[in-house]
Length: 359
Image 1 (tube, rainbow, N blue to C red):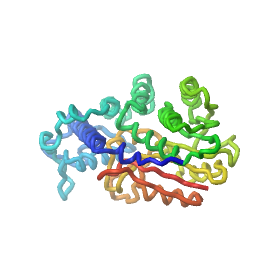
Image 2: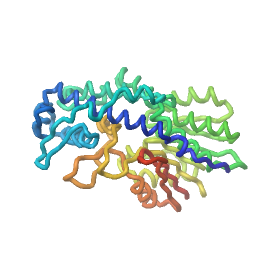
Image 3: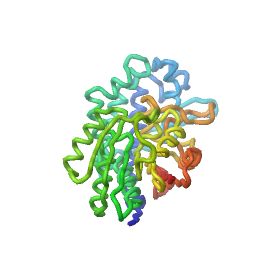
Image 4: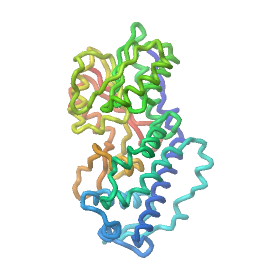
């Protein structure tokens, strides 16, 4: 068994600088959207005034609250004790020239943010269906580029997961692996490449997704590149796992998907039942340091089904989908894993967590 310290290599200074820049870019773009909608960001405004100027439906008010809290976090808005917001001059906090020196591909993040922000007023007004916006022809193309190993802000989560699972791979036999939420196949590609690099053999690799079309497409692409692996595909809904035998897999692999479950604990418990004795679940997730922190990617993902408010305090601005590392560890224990661990990434800022559970 070979072990790596991929977190230190992947979540390096350049990565954190790129992430911070995209967060500022998101804030700058949201300020522009508020200004375009007629919100008086320079003269001062309240949350209620922002909601009214945007023409926001009640169900989207939490999203407006999130945007205001995110802008305060990014120091793009100041807020008084009375709840009055006012713009901070962008030249005090936003420096677009920084992007030129990053030497990382962040374009997929920025183009997706641009696209969703262009539709955001229509979405919160009920004039556009977020699912149609996100998964129409233009949206689907942007997602495919976003969930790609050429996108440096996202690829680190795939690579860290691939290295972490490969660290657990046995040397004396071919492993049986199930991936849930395969999507466009970038996490699977990272794992197959990592195992090939280490001369490790996967016997059977079952790619699954709630969309059988996506799972089948991923299988077609990967089987051509890795003909020695028995790659299969099927539909699996992580909320209702059916048609898969218990104790069937040595490893289950999931990258940024389990947080979408209706009940994370129940889904983890169902996945545990599919592992053979000594088997391991490897989960890579974006996380927040605490529930006072908001992630720029929340803006986009919060408009999708499954990204509910996970903020425990009803008085606090919402936090969508992404949990803390400690909460993940507790959820794994509650799901019945014999041993559970949750390791956050290297560096000063918490961006991701590697969760492992053994049966």
